Image (cartoon, rainbow, N blue to C red; front, side, top):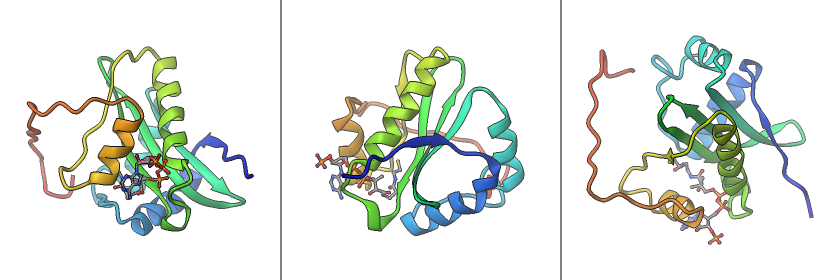
Length: 145
Ligand SMILES: CC(C)(COP(=O)(O)OP(=O)(O)OC[C@H]1O[C@@H](n2cnc3c(N)ncnc32)[C@H](O)[C@@H]1OP(=O)(O)O)[C@@H](O)C(=O)NCCC(=O)NCCS
C-alpha cells in the first residue's frame, strides 16, 4: 500500500495549489488573499504552513495552517476527487496540527460552511467539537478579499 507523505509547500507550487482548489470545488479569492503575492508573503512567515501530499509530482491534497498567537486555524483542506476516501485529508489535518502545536497552539479550530457535511464529519472524526452557539461575522475592504 502506498505511503502518503505530507510536506510543506512553497510558492513554486502556487499553480498546483490553485488547480487543486479548483478541482476540489473549493471557493478561493485569486484577487484577494489567494493571490500569488499574498500567498508568497504568508509562506514567508513562521506562523503559516501550506501542507501538501503528492502522488509522484502531482499535488493531490493540501491544507493551510495558521497561528494567530491565540488560536491555530486549519483552512482550505482539499483533496483531488480522484484521491478521496483514502485518509489523505486526515493526514493533512494531522500535519497541520503538528505544525501548529510545534509553534505553541493549544487550541486548533476551523470554520466550515453549514452545508459542508463531509468536511464536518472529517473534523469531527479528528476530535473537533462543533460549537453551535457561534455565528461568523466579518468586515471586508472589498468583496474580493
Ligand atoms: C472533505 C474532503 C477534504 C475529505 O477528503 P478525503 O481525503 O476524502 O477524507 P478522508 O479520506 O481523510 O476522510 C476522513 C473522514 O472524513 C469524513 N468524510 C470524508 N468524505 C466524506 C463524505 N463524502 N461524506 C461524509 N463523510 C465524509 C468521514 O468521517 C471520513 O472517515 P471514514 O472514511 O472513516 O468514514 C474532500 O471531500 C474535499 O476536498 N472536499 C472539497 C473541499 C472542501 O469542502 N474542503 C473542506 C473545507 S473546510
